[in-house]
Length: 163
Image 1 (tube, rainbow, N blue to C red):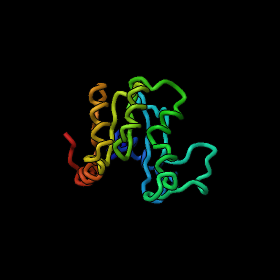
Image 2 (image 1 turned 180 degrees about the vertical axis):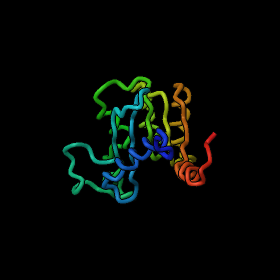
Image 3 (image 1 turned 45 degrees about the vertical axis):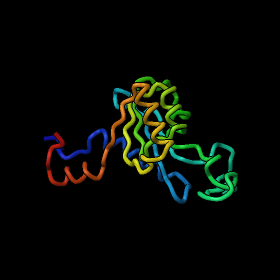
Image 4 (image 1 turned 60 degrees about the vertical axis):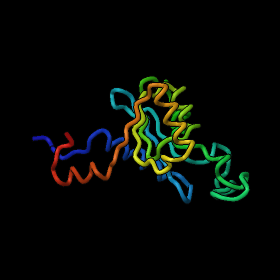
């Protein structure tokens, strides 16, 4: 008899996104992303970090102060890293990401051909960049789905179906 209590695809791919986030050197925010195709094959992964050739011991990780002395002009977001690291076209793929994408990542997501974004945390929902991101992705026909991993884990512990 096969094992019954296994994680579903959403939990699996969000777990890969979380594992990827552990590679981030950012002391405040670690974000991971996982891109998968229709056949549940991992196409690419990424995390937020400095671009190749930019020493993460030299560049700033600060959140406040002089813009050029903060992380913001330099860090590549997890979603963009995953898109740039993909070894094949991303048409009709699904992006799993631990934090809802900003407006700049939304542009790359749209242009890449990704059709669904599954996210967990939406802590910047009221920020203008997130509002713009949601507007662009919805207008481009990208499905947005929030996954509350904690709820899924609790449901599994209770032995309840998600239906």
